Amino acid sequence: MNEHPSTSRPIEAEAAERYAAWFKALADPTRIRLLNLLAVQGRPMNVGEIVERASVGQSTVSHHLKILAEVRFVLPERHGTSTRYEVNQACLTVFPAAVRAILGGSGEEEHGGC
Image (cartoon, rainbow, N blue to C red):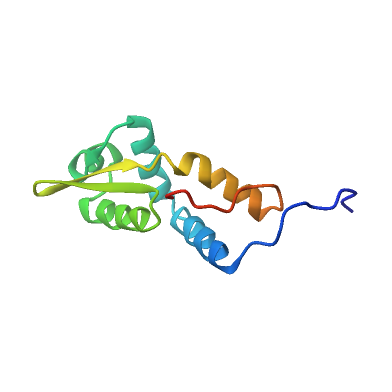
């Protein structure tokens, strides 16, 4: 039994929905790999570049990038007829705070653009 009462408050329904969407987006190994590729490259990449490095078909990459963009883990930016994707840096601090809030820690419930 926990000897120290939690000082955090219960998660609001809206935050719970957002967090569930984040975890659902990360619940696929291909999306994890694509997100990691973008993070490691450290620069915006177009779908063709991602396909070359990820060894996954173009339609699969596009499908997974769409899901990652819906939860703002990646940010799409149009350049002429193509779109480049990059990691949303705001998620680097917001996502860990969300995990702490879910587990009853003192995590911040703000989504900070993620």
